Length: 212
Image 1 (cartoon, rainbow, N blue to C red):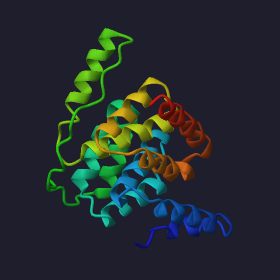
Image 2 (image 1 turned 60 degrees about the vertical axis):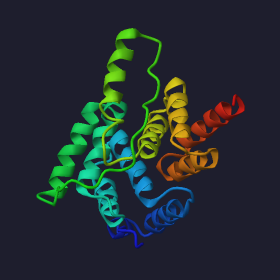
Image 3 (image 1 turned 135 degrees about the horizontal axis):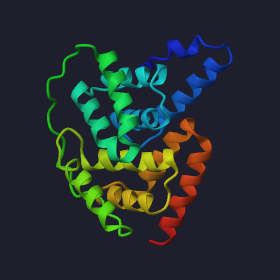
Image 4 (image 1 turned 90 degrees about the vertical axis):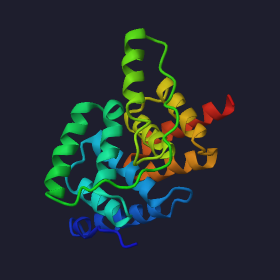
């Protein structure tokens, strides 16, 4: 599939080829469907406030990959408690501007979403709030349990929440059938979005794997 990168290439004679090379590497990472890769890139846009050209390109690529506007909106809905509601509000504002009347007919439901991660034990009130947030999302249609778990792991990498949240979301991904190599491929995919953050996440993942 051709990458919609023309708007990046023209920015700078040297940077353009660098960006194309990085994007080509990400596209070649195995073990993840293109729609899953697009979801991860959108999570990066939301978490980092990259709602200009990168967000537009990733939405366009998502549509090329077969994601409907409703599925793209569901990605944002799922991200809200993890990436933060204010960040997702801004992402919805931009999505509405970009879509501007595009077809929003519901897409077919994905696989059953499965069980959300176990709530934290650090604070009862917060645990109750988070349990409610997760119970109202993980059972929704359009995204699978695997896709929702991968999105949560991606947010942990972007925000560097690599302690208990990362552990819980890695366990949720494993429960959804994501194996160890696919988790590493997920992190490799994110290299172009912040090498230092991915470095830290790979170390955290290795620690979890060593504990079994």
